[in-house]
Image 1 (cartoon, rainbow, N blue to C red):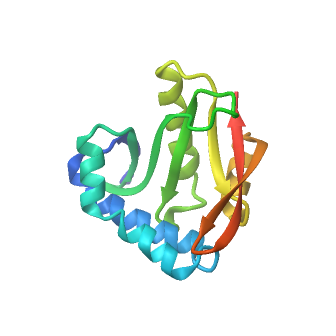
Image 2: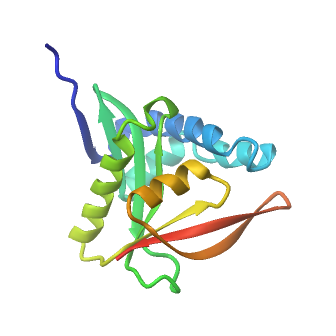
Length: 168
């Protein structure tokens, strides 16, 4: 019987095309109908393979989840950007190809990102999610996140709420 393994590792330059594809598919799946169409298209358009290649070369903290030798998810992470949240680390993004969601891969990627931040001496972490993104809210609640703050994001004149989760 063939065993198919999932592995979390740092992104490499060869992952740039896959990262751009995951970003587009996950963002269209999560935000179509929520973020205005043109704004969403612009946001996705800015994050093509060249953007990812530059980020990897600049040593941004990007983890990828590889399943059956295919990159199917990613997380970007670093220092918390919101002083009011009294934690050191932040997961900026955590996305999977839509067909790989709900299979435990998000949990594995989240735990690897959390472990990396802790290993870098950061105590606690934060994650922001749009308030209308029920899948993300449910995921972060299931991961033990505590809803501690609300904020707003503006997309082409549309004001959307966002929620901060923290882990101490």
